[in-house]
Image (cartoon, rainbow, N blue to C red; front, side):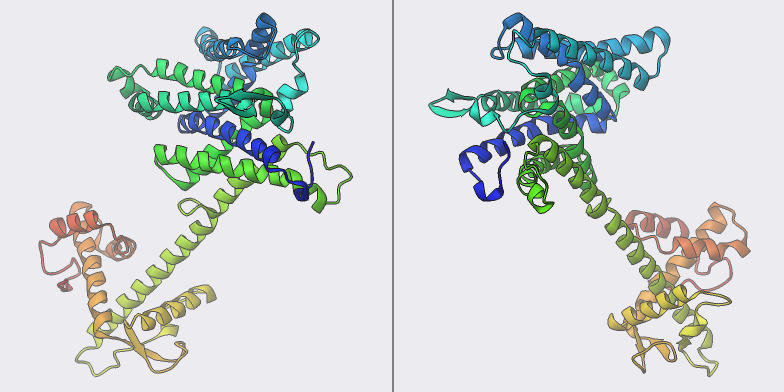
Length: 452
């Protein structure tokens, strides 16, 4: 039922995106809680294990309408958690193994039941697995005077109920997710919170199954929450970001289903929106892994390089300061040749970093030099650079004084350790260092500790 992007119909394709977005937002809330509990695969298990409950609901009611399928799915979801705990307690079975046995058994049972009742109930096994969101806008109901797909009111209702339950039980769910022992001590009943979470997952799965299928439900339970976790470390913003990522996946997935077959010159343009949305959600996770500001690979490399360059700048300032102090009154030059900074055997990378550090220090007006290229030239501290170097040298010698007293490190080992610690810039740590170590005017080597 997929069409070319030129044949876009707002009333048709718009409802497809709305339905998929509602599923994504409904799944993002419990999916985020499952992720921080390290139980994302439990959501996968529940999304499969509720299938016999759905089938029994259809079998009892004989129709897709009503709350029978929702009740059956909730019972099946609770049964999944209880049977998993039973197997773990009965034979000491590993959690993952017990979960795998339970959800595969219930999922197989659900498929058997669906096949048995498929002739008497309008229920297609492939629809349950892969979804038919392209057909959802054709099955309409009138709600509050507005004609809309039948799946929309159910999805809206479950989304609102899920949101309200999480808000009401926020503190209990928060404590139970991160520290179950503390939650139990405070009377938050973490086992009950676990069952509430299973109910939310089961409710979201049952209203999404027919529209988008189990494969996309599993993807939307895990992928948006995983991508959001790479963006923020706080749970509430993480849920909001996961919902936004789910909406982006819904839009991008449907557009991909419409356009990608044409780009690849495929013989068929009948690409499942559910499958395309699952792939697009995975793409967003990969994008977050690479480009997340906090934990992304690219930013991680950038932060490490920036930190390395900062250390090089501070080391260069320290060398310049020591040369200036040592040569004072001896009639020697107060500059330093950059080729000397590497000592006995630095590689080209080290020399390149030090030269780049010299350029940055000159740009910040911490040093002066006579030429444009720092390699052959002598560089000297400015007043601003000398002030900054004084802070670094004081920090270095305070660390030596502290380590010699509190850690009893031999004097000949102090310098290398202090060289690493002097680059720490935590304000609280530095304040404690000032309070503990600033008890003398000289370091263990007898050198004066400069005043800040």
